[in-house]
Amino acid sequence: MTGMPTVLDVARVAGVSRQTVSNVINAPELVREETRQRVKTAIAALGYQPHASARRLRTRQSSTIGVRLDQARDGISGNLLDRFLHAMTLQADARGRRVLLFAASDAHDEVEHIRRLSDGADADTFVLTSTEHGDARVAWMLENHVPFVTFGRPWGAEDMTTHAWVDVDGRAGTAAATDHFLDQGLQRIGLLGWPQPSGTGDDRRRGWEEALAARGIALDPALTAESPDDVGTAESVVAEWWRSGADVEALVCVSDSLALGASMAMQRAGRSVPVVGFDNTPVARALGISSVEQRTDLVAASVLDLLLAPGAAGSRQRLITPELVVREPR
Image (cartoon, rainbow, N blue to C red; front, side, top):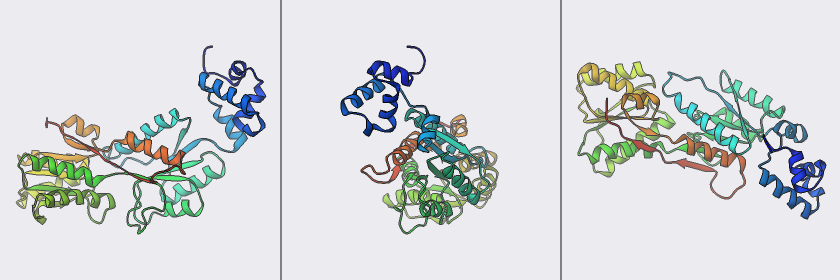
């Protein structure tokens, strides 16, 4: 047999009719147990998968996961979601599912897309990314009983267990970066963070604070600076930080965009201290900047686990431990 197996191939191997195979797939209660098992054995042996379009017409279910495709902000940090979507698409395909990407101008527009896709059976489940405090999308999904998982925690919520989510433990990532410098005998470890309050940014800041506190090192406000997630702004902030007399022996940044801006500022100022970013983007790899890898393959696997088996035993909230990638600067 060449090509993908068909329902006729299954019928031939199992010694039954095409209609019997269809019944086993769509209405197994109509088929005797012995025959049902024989057909299932043939399906497994051939690796047969029912045609998705036909299954959608019969069941009003598309086996499709809808995800909004966000526009990259600066071409650096946006790479994280690109990698997540790529990993999820590959893994979803291996599980007999497909991913439908759509664009939306804002959160309200995203909800409207989800409503239409759900009503038309174009997508059965959804993944929300870029979560924020008081996320209106989450409230709508819960109110309308639309199955979903978020990549990101419900920041600011009193109850973190109202829905299924997967996130990366940013606190563990910056703590590992800080410990790396402390293990080298460095003491004045600076932090370049995002403006507060910021759910993800504050979480990463706490990792730096806790790592220093665990070594008995008092927090010094002079060792911290803030910048929006923009390379040019970060460069300006760090340049001014140096001019004001910042005395750091190493720098932990909450994103690769900030790490790149800091590196550029130090190069222009003729200074050189080791830097660690966050997200392990291609830019960090190309420039030899150490960074924290979010392990989007594990995030994607966990998201799919929660989407496809929502009632399975175990927590509906999962934190993925990131990995520190240390590089020699170039």
